[in-house]
Length: 234
Image 1 (cartoon, helix red, strand yellow):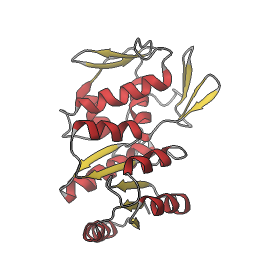
Image 2 (cartoon, rainbow, N blue to C red):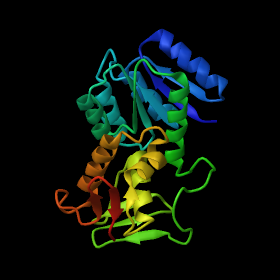
Image 3 (cartoon, rainbow, N blue to C red):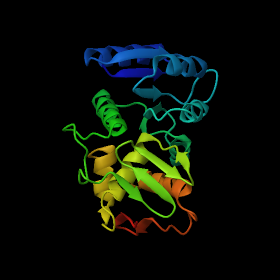
């Protein structure tokens, strides 16, 4: 059973989320503030976290950063804050998706399922979405990607990636030298219907370059084809 941690201080919304999630066989834990959320995340080890940014004891961004210090659990933001700056700040802190209040429950559930699939490396049919089964590792002079263990190492140290960062990197490295269109990446990583959200790709590619490239401003491996898409050069 997939376990969801709901971090939200609006009691009516918590009740609505709990009812809808439990009706679909999710196990639900709820935290009304950031402190409780961090304790429950450590104790209950949820499979996905829904988190509001406007919490009574601390900003949700700080909760996201604290969680990202030790876990790759998918983090889906639910917030009334809707500016591009606030969304980018959440993504850079480690969020995997961002849903603006008020939201449609059906869309939230679909985005939740997509976040869980990304974290397990599965597509809708339960298999890896791209790549040949015999490809186990991808090695460059600067980093190594273990596609089986879902780990990246650089300079003999483990590189911490969020589930969304991993999914994006995996799609690219499984097709070296091949241009992957913006639409395909958005469909694969965030799901259909988000073809216009190219800012998601820019934010996450920038994060991957900071973590993997020697000179992120002049990438050697994660290449942008302006207006078209991205490719990986091994």
